[in-house]
Image (cartoon, rainbow, N blue to C red):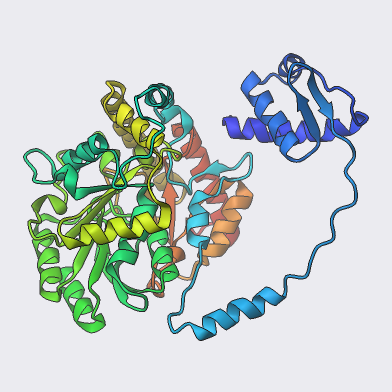
Length: 485
């Protein structure tokens, strides 16, 4: 069982037991709770902390945990209906229509209820994260001279140098001076969009693509214009036409293990994409989110687009978050020319800088012997999980067609039978005990077909992946009817 599930279940049990005690009465000791409920001391500590946040118990250091005083009447709720007028009036006065819709992102970020197998998210489970190495790195980082001082606005130089070598590759011309440290990949996307395109402008995006990119564009007042992809990545002819028709000066893409299709931009298309951008006088924003998540059988990876871009056309972004931990929100933007100063200015206005202890911890982590060992382990485990998911899908739900099986990242893109209501299927899956991501959020325009994205990263192992797909079959039987698979 996942630790978070154990905490939630114990908190629910203790929440009911608290009513047996009078206000001010002492609860059983942590040791007694560990023995009674057969959980770890960490689980007990976190469950009690949850009850303390809810105001049900009070912790007194050295004395124990006590039932809190009874709560008084709930405070009167004010009338917030005036906000509807204020917000709509702002939109009417604003010539740029902004849309802040986080539903697609929340579908992959939200933690499912206890007992539900997570096949919607994009993060590794705790036992596949380098948590011991992270803890040691954070401890060492906190003792570094100047660790708690204000960092350079563009980031700690040694960390920028490490990112530069990763982005440029062996013999590459990317230097630390070309890199800006960011608070993860999503922050880098938002910074790039705000720096490169004025409100109201069109920006080209792959179709389908990462929902967080579409949401960030719309929240910035931009118009995402879709350019279809196939198993070899974006289609250059359609990209050229989209530049001409829209007047866009920015194209955002994921050339390696694209989310959600898993496509890798074919070698013969790479030069064509850069040439289309050159003819349009446009930037290419390269989201290299999955390079550290290549599977064991991926073979040599293509270099980044930025590695062969002497003219500063490519703005490259990457992050450590997916390969390390959801809370290690450290990434990078790499650019050349005046645009780098624009990116730096936007990030400074938005957030000043990435906290130095977090940067120092990231530097300690990637410089330790544990880091390459961790990446090798992840590469092997992701390959195993991919094969487990493909095997289970072929056995249980062959009608859900896998459009492409990438040898990198953590997801599979499933095309549903014609006429399937993907939202209804996702809801039925949740009721059956597995969370999946409906495909609609991955399209900037109306999709030609219905899809689901299935992630094999968050599950505890191959057995849980197989059980998750079995539960998905039960949902398909409910929505499609038995015998249609």
